[in-house]
Length: 211
Image (tube, rainbow, N blue to C red; front, side, top):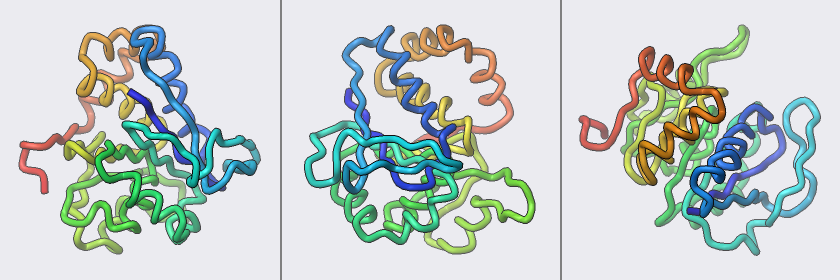
């Protein structure tokens, strides 16, 4: 299974933890692979200054199985970028789309969540407005849920910030195996946190009354 991680200016660096989970998971599932992709291979400036060089641009990105769409303050501009929207629509077809944090806002703007249930980041520091409320307000065709994550089978939307770790563990558990995911959680010392998060927020999956 190959993961592609979308980069754009203004991604919150904590969302890069999703790559870290896949990297650590290779110790348990060696056949896992990952790459990073952006509009081109120029330096991408993450929120607050971290700079990352993508492996590929949109034009030459090889095939992948999972496309991870991160969030961060740059989501507002990125969601209006025609090149990003087109990439999501074109490469998301037949691929598992996974948004983490406000990455769901990019999927929403691309029309990829219309008619589906979805979640996104909820907690903010005033005067910021909760992205979950923005998703509900600006995209009435989306069934907005307060959840740890919403897994529709082909599109998975995760909650805020550090829940990117939970989303990656969920992908491994449901697409590879629960035992492998539990072992990954153990070696990254996240098992207790994962169980605590699952206890405080629901994980909604296809077949459970989702839109």
